Image (cartoon, rainbow, N blue to C red):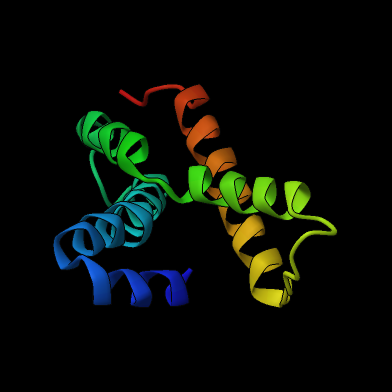
Length: 109
């Protein structure tokens, strides 16, 4: 992901800035916000903002795109998958699960 962003910075800085925000900073902000919410350090009134950040976060879409490229490109291109892909997959799945559980958590009075 970082290599792709680096090459994008060379060709189009404004698009690279947008993709960097959507693929890196929005997922981090959403995940940190959800963690603070679960530790009761953030008000539940921030859930709409976290929901918007979740919709803006392209990390899960980016992950699906990587897997599609790997599957469709099998045999045509050489793609090396390192441990980072599996870690990234785990982080995205954990983020999706925490966001799902946050919606199911009953409100405390």
